[in-house]
Image (cartoon, rainbow, N blue to C red; front, side, top):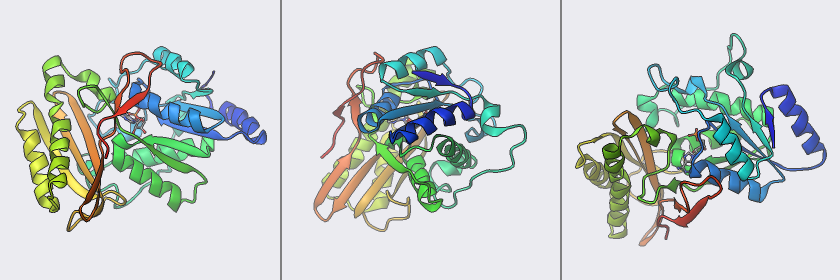
Length: 311
Ligand code: AMP
């Protein structure tokens, strides 16, 4: 595996690969890998000749006062995990390499970034859109792999790629969970044991919402209320939002029909956690996707495993 820190060096390596007609799969991350990240690497590895992973804790996607400085960083462990997953290139640029001394260009995606997490994090998705555009320009991959855990981000990046006519396939990969259902997140590391236990209420609330739809609930506002209520029974978990929207464009729903996203954000201790389930409703037929339980959440070589619940 090559560790590359400079954009020019990366371009050289990837130009060579493309000249040999080798397809490039790209996984952008902020590092401190868990099984969710590894599942993206595995998806890229299975489908592409050359796999590039970037690790860049992007300052522009943190709101003022958020955890940019203390965000976990572990470059040695990350490199070992990339090796174990058969990654070809680990790109780990410095901030200057990505932004230069005085950046004047940003990428704004309207509408899709205004609801859900955009309400409490008004700058976040512009930072994401800007850095993802820069990374896609540097790497020039055939396909880029994103987790459905950050569902709004996935919708934003899909739209960004299609509206800017970027020649890249945006692949959405399953949300990976801990054995007790908590969505894997780098920020879970901030939780104390009691908070960590309390956080599992989020997964149970989403399952509760799915059960209601399976039992015939078709009113988005009622579904939203019952998911919210199921979370607020846990005093350690402060709900930020529970929303029920169209999965494709995060738009308003009058009735539960088609592809539906139930998305939640909550604060637990020092962490802000997000989670979601997608539900496909076609009349009486209901399919849902709560993601997968990590086969082995502790060892670096293992990846995503059994479905958390999909039918
Ligand atoms: P991050 O390093 O947190 O910025 O995430 C990098 C990529 O990993 C994004 O595409 C995330 O959606 C994805 N990711 C993070 N956590 C999970 C998870 N639990 N399951 C699946 N993908 C994830």
